[in-house]
Image 1 (spheres, rainbow, N blue to C red):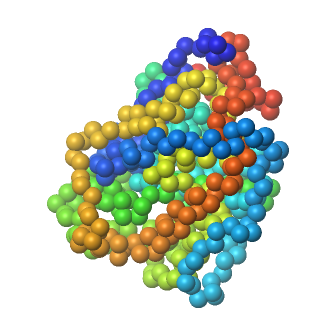
Image 2: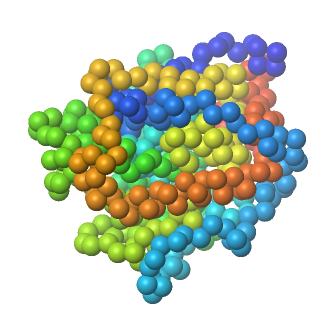
Length: 418
């Protein structure tokens, strides 16, 4: 075969370890009891029942339009928050991010908004470990690269032994200070990153410019499931700043009524209203940010979600396609994502005291999530003219003998083993 000369797994694309970035892993049902690996966020991967969606065959025979599917705001699902109507929906503070319906351009910067405990680590690992794209995350400044004077692609160690190191830009886009440093180093115009990861969308807007814009995408999880997962996770995640071993003695009800529990985290982050009270205007604004600026994914639909991201951003395999596909399959079907702690927790029933208390903490986020679920179906239109198997179409293999490359060129990841 075209790729048969390459040794399976020789370059690490097909390894089953979900840990290029060291995130802790745990099944959804386990609610985030993490394995004892160091991690930046330690999100749970998608739930078992979320796997195995059959990718849509729709559009597999369609031609790929030069500018992608036609994307227009007309008729595009509006938010239905009962706000006052006086809220500013111009989104001027996010103007360096393209609207979702703006035509695709190869120069667009993919920006992944990382929501803790929502399956983000799985997406990060597919992008970095399987697609082998250059990432901008917290990992780029390890091995002393936080002192680098110039922006560059680096290969820090720390991944699984014997696996090829992944490429990163030597900045940290997951902290506000790191975003400021990246901006000063000319991050946007460098064009070095294939994907950027950050929890801070308003600060990350400053990373980009009117001529080098970003495009936001993320994976969402039901707010109450996420809250429960976070509660159990911070009890054991001793590598996290948020580590709270004392919560092991708490009930979920105690947590839900404490100031440790998050309050409408998504709505606050999306509106930059981190303190104080929220009202319907904030919900209306959060819905508009999601509607205009985000390609949305769902943790419960991780197969469809990852495929949609790949089609939307035109991501194709260029390193060793059979290994890369095997890597992707393993990560999306669980890979090493098992509840190693054996500390499995049951989810409280809807209507129970714990559930109701968490619902009160997340009333706006719950309404927002309902809207996101509808939007997820609506946004299928953005990729209807892109073949479902786009990642394998016109794939090339830079680590085969002889190597092949796409017409636009591709920088093959260096073979540096951990």
